Image (cartoon, rainbow, N blue to C red; front, side, top):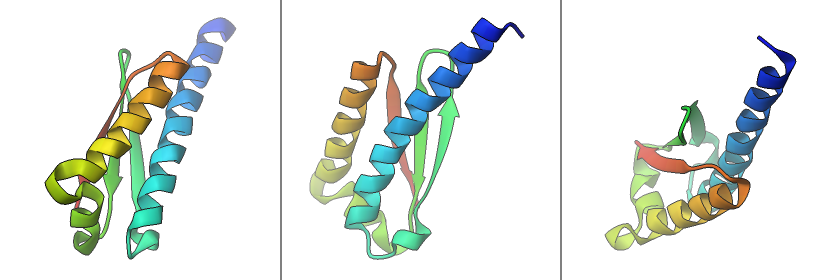
Length: 94
């Protein structure tokens, strides 16, 4: 792999990691069991997916009433991704 391509891949990973850090900060701030929060970042060519796993008892808090909380988290993640020139999706797993 060329150094240029390697550097680009590392840069993309850093972008998705920065977005994941924001998502993790937001989720940990609202759950009762912050130690149970884990994130998996799946990088694809066109976008990244951040899968957030939380304790079963915290799923409802992360989703929020009528999905408002997860919608707000997704909006912030997408705004940061757009600013960084990439795209992201956030999914919640129980």
